[in-house]
Length: 184
Image (cartoon, rainbow, N blue to C red; front, side):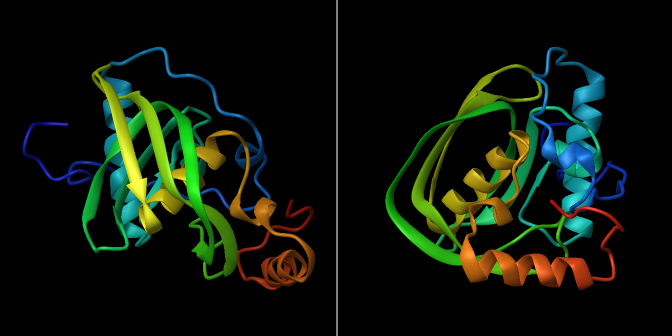
């Protein structure tokens, strides 16, 4: 990305992978090349996230099984957090556990009350290979945990149990975007 440019302004919107696509269930590979291909992927991910009106997007949500995510997400004080992390590691998830509404661009139009910690710290790298540490609280902490889950092959529905999980999976099965076959 060029310094000072708006993330995603030069990216291409890619198709989103939806629940039922196997790439969402596989742990993603570490990024080993920090060159123009990675920069292009991050730029495309921002463009795709903005087009879909999301606050975060993991690479496997655009069909790339790589450990990368982007975000443009407010915290509970409405402070905007904008960035990306390559090869992220969730190093802290602590504080209060809060159940709040959570959705996902790979389960469009659906959401469920999902428990997450209200504080999270992610360490990783920028597209140029510089170390980065991202601290999140409230809604932004939820976003960081959600995106790290994607890179491990998990979706927010995996945190649900009982009637909440059954209800979400019924809604997903009836959704216009649902694939035939398994929605796990």
